[in-house]
Length: 517
Image (cartoon, rainbow, N blue to C red; front, top):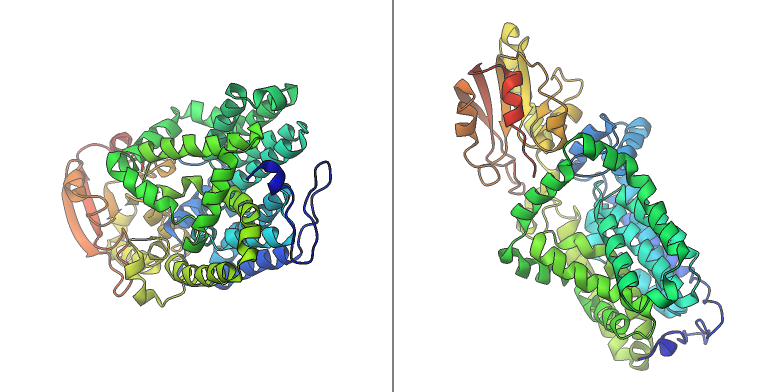
């Protein structure tokens, strides 16, 4: 199929898409209905179960607003701070913003199909294909960085498609702004932008799309990340050490198969044929800039497969573009045979229903254990009030004179966030933590003689009691973390310890406790 064929689809009412030298078709209003349905679905489930471990950490980050953090830039914690100010500690309030991002991503998917020449039918199919992506629904159910990152990547690709269609390089300024803002949600947007820039400068697109506006766009992309770079420079470039830790945990040859298989789950199963058709078209496109998107996909596919393969969602935003162009490419084929269309509709409905059960809190909490190995999202939203109650029992059980010189110390950022957010106002002190940015906030009382230590299950952090004994003469296990009937998350089987008799001052021990994961 040629580029010209893609720019001349016809919808079910005989309207035409973009003709050569013409304007794109109007955006189908039904797209807004699909986006609204995604938003309504996410908000309907927003208050089930509880806060995710990442959300508890982001709320902690929101109370420590700074230019950047070990594991993400500032914008997602900033939105968490806005949520705190407006709604307090509220799962529904916190999840409002990722739900809006998901709805926006659906609209961007339809706009991308429109840029490829899609009229009403392809636009609607692109919106539905985006809306039914399990990675979109799952990531937008929790307020970390993934939903914003997906929207940023999809929007960057949309602008690149528009430049490729119109030749109007003024849009590079918008692309640069999107890369910069996206990188302030998640550093991966900067990687996407860098790969796209290299593809343009080193390939045939250089002759048609590389001018001074591309340079200005690159400079614009740098401006929003300057505070992030400043913070990183003052904290030993922690993001690089964090990246090495993630790659060691999630990368390597053993996870390449996980990555490849995981890409089949980025869209609902019935839509795989759509994005594959889109990728094939982009790779064979006569427009060099469109071909750059396929090249970027290939480069990033290989890069992520060999570095951090278990993080299968890193390419999620590019699938929005692939689904959009695939919707345009397959429009005539689908409507030429009604059986194909019915099969796609039925397959989409079934696979979306199954994936929704896995990535959204649809089932009762006691029935989600089987989903944890596929998607840990629901499992990591359970058990936190029980953990805080256990820690409070241990804390209040200490004599008052020992509590006066004691700290609560969490090995995992979710544990620290749970104590600090869900335990706020219950008599518990602010917990300190060793993981990621928690460590940079310090040990609390540097002269503490009693430490109440919380550790996740041994599958996640084996041998932790032995590690504590390196620093304390007396380490007693006083409680076990459990959530009967729930998912086997990383906290299950963990312990709470009372540690006394520090071998050195607590403040001197602190530098050795840092953990990036």
